[in-house]
Length: 541
Image (cartoon, rainbow, N blue to C red; front, side, top):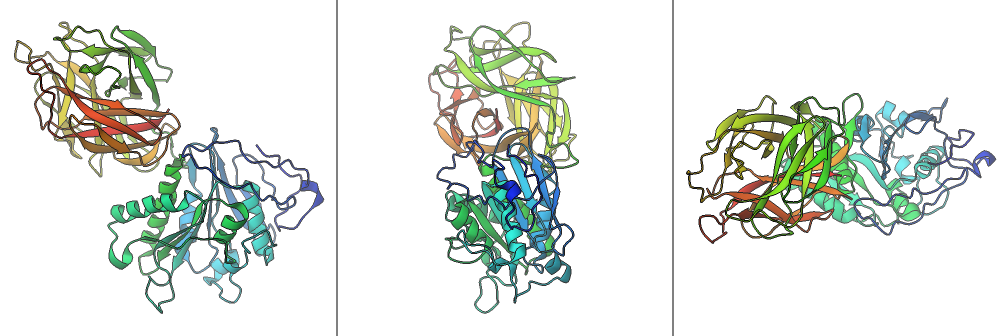
């Protein structure tokens, strides 16, 4: 944590009281693996004072430039994100989106928002062109050209951001003579700005169905050759970030939504998830970790305050190639038992494996990013039973399932799911194909977690949910953000092939994993399987 200067200094001019304030860079290694950032160009007298580690404060107090800097600092160490809006007073999308972002929390690191950088221009709904604030930031260490620019730059230096977003809007859209650049992200020259921007642009266009002139594009690189704020971020600090433009040919609320999506999507790529002040950024109480499993039953504790917990660890690693899956029993608020389970035709002796585990209390939740989650149980046997959601899902959720019990016969089973929709799904338990009694199995308690796909935070940890198509061959899943300690869960969501099958995984890293469908061989030797839908959830451990 930096020391706080003893004297507020919002004007950006030097004062002796802050010369020995002990400012230093954070010792955080970002989850996204961002490297090559230049050292901070800190100016000894440039730092405005702030009241507390997680608080708002005022700069230019008592002047025409008076404005609020919003700061949220999470308990967990992480990157510092800075968002600036309102540099141009007539570009409403920028400052209105920044106002919304000022209400966010983050799961790690710090979020700093200067939503209305040019209060007088905003009040007048005016740029102004003759004294353009965004032409007062020389891209080197030269002093900024105006008092307002100096104070704003002092705020940037003080917070020493790892990523910076400057939110704007444009009158036109890529057409000669219309006076605007349109919808684009202009990256600084610092890696991984451009590659991160390309991912976000693709996601923006897909999410909002933008095409033709309205489609987002990547703009030219900001290479410190102009007197703009983000050119100075590139030249003086060598930090990644974007000058973000929307087109004013679109409705204002859509422009704001695009800015919000951009900032959140890029943040997620470098391992920072957002919440909203006044709501639970955590959503349900959740525990997640990677279990070490063997063939004997072992006990595992839970530390959360649960009433009716469910535990899922449905995808098994691939240390041993023999068909196998994880099995769970005796779930209580204090813990559960789990093991690696082979099929009846095998010897039930298996290599130690790992499985990502998630424990949640039953219920329906709305996460801070607006996505719905439903956690519950049902009782089914070998025939499919239907589950109807109580949550109001706007998109088809990813559904993970796993039995929580072991019946008196103790025969191995996996769960099978199909017909997943916004209304519900069907599920059953399935024994091995060669079972003599035709696959009959008495009812078991089956737990499920249904979560809308996308990026966000679950229990204050970065996460993403999605689905892929897999068969008996290894399929690579590239994550949309990076994880320092990924916990991976996956289960089959369809019933295209009737053979008993479960998800196996290997080569799990912070950015990807490989999955395949492991079919058992009790009825025949072949292990080929038709394509199935596989739902997955990745969480920061």
